[in-house]
Structure formats: structure tokens, C-alpha cells
Image (cartoon, rainbow, N blue to C red; front, side, top):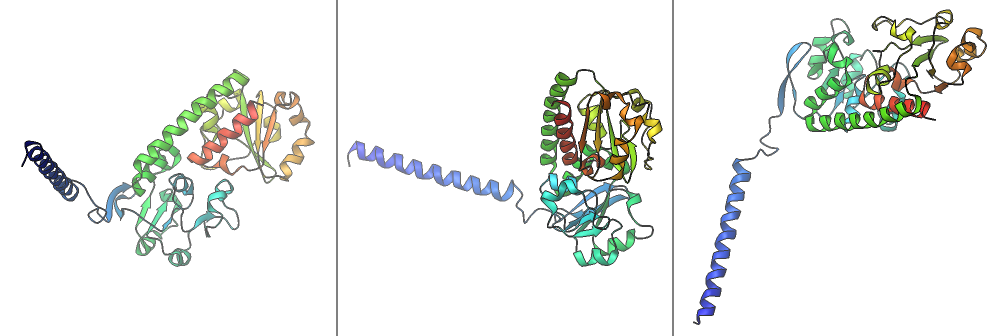
Length: 318
């Protein structure tokens, strides 16, 4: 055999040995170094408002009334969605239009019919008195702490832990903050230091958003918009949101007003015929914008906040 052929044969043998060694090493790593889906625990233990709770690692059938925003943001559909009669969270219906409704107080019979493998409550107060143990007999239960539910960032982060999607939750928050920074710059360029107030029109009554109420936090915190003196002097928001009279609104010196309320609400007609309303600086200047889907304004959630941000930018930069 020639020297050339011997060298060629030797090189071929070496290559085969290296390939075999690498394959064995990779097989060993995949078998012992990583976790397969089969090896992953089927349950996880977390801390909620009730203490330590054990829930499925990857729940498939979830009921989470008034937490659908966080679910949808992380790509999960519940088996039933929160409702009061026929009223649902309208801003989420592009994603949830085919999801059955479940009454806000979660009737036990309906919960059993939906066969959840996890039930999530927005707060301890959201559970009907004496029903907690009954729900636990149907499926594991996770209960948000009040402070966690009130802050959509914490709300989404916790949902990421529940669903095993912590990285996705972090990325969603990061993307939101970048969008907010861009929107803030646009609004600042458009209105400078002008003040803005938001009013919810419902059932012929008027609800002035406090600085810390629902999506008003998008205006005053995320977008850095200045609040008028009437809003600045309001006390911190309380669970019971009381309407404000037209007479009290006479002191609203905002440069811009955003009205949110369903089309045809009698409150809008009353404003048109009110001398108090017509005398407000923003109204006289033509700086009033109206949005007829108020649902994203009255919820704490990342999707709701994004929609509110879009509303604010369209209203204030036109």
C-alpha cells in the first residue's frame, strides 16, 4: 500500500472516531444534563394570598375571571371569560369572542361544567364567602394578593410564574416600556406641559379618574402627562368609585379632556346641554376627545394599558 493511501485511510479512521465520540458525548449530555418534558414535575408550589399552594406546572384549562388580560398577553385562552350578564371586557373580544361567558361570581355548577384544572382569583375578596374550599374540590386554586392584582406589571409577572412563562412576561413588560417611552416623547412634543383629565361616562353619571385609578396611570405615570389641579387634589382611589357632579366639574381647568363611555349614554346628551360643561377651558378650545369603548380604561392590564396609550396618543397628537 502506498504512503498516500495509508495516510488517507488513517485520516478516515480518525474522523469516524471523532464523530462517534461526539455523538456519545451529546447523547450523554441530553440524557443526564437536561430535563425532558417527561422528567419535569407535573406540579409546582407557589405562594399566594392564602399561603403555599400547589398547582399544575402547565395548566391547560384555566378559569381566571378579570385576569384574562394577563392570560391573553401570554398567549393563553381561558375556558370561560368573566361576565356580568352579557357584559364582557370588550377590548379583549378579538381574542376571546369564541370563549363562553361565566358569571362574575363563579357559580359552582358552571365551574364544574367547564372542568378547569386551575382556578385563579384576582383577590381574596373576589371569592364568594365560604366558597373557597368548594372551589378547591373542583380544581387547584390560586388567589392573587390585592397589591399584586392592582399593579399590572406584578399581575403579569405572577401569571408568568403560574404558566411557566416568566421570560415571556419579562419581554412583554420590556416591550411595553419601550413603546411607552416613544409615546411619551410624541405626546410631550404635541402638548408640552398641557394638563389632561379623563372622565368615564356611565349611566348618565360622570367619574373623574384619580391619578392612580386604572388606566389613568398610563396618562400620569407612563406618559408623564400633567394632571389638572382638580385631579391633583383628589384623594387616592378607593374600591368604591363615586361619581362627580356637573357642578363640581366646573372647577376642571384641564387643557384637554378625554371622555370614555358607550355611544348613546344619556350622560353625553346632558353634557351637550350643560352650561357648566360648555364653559370649561378644554371644551371651549375644542380639546375634547371621545372613545366609545371604555372597557380598556377601567381595567389594570398590559393589553388594556397599551390600548389606553394608543387612545391617548391619537387624542393628544392630532
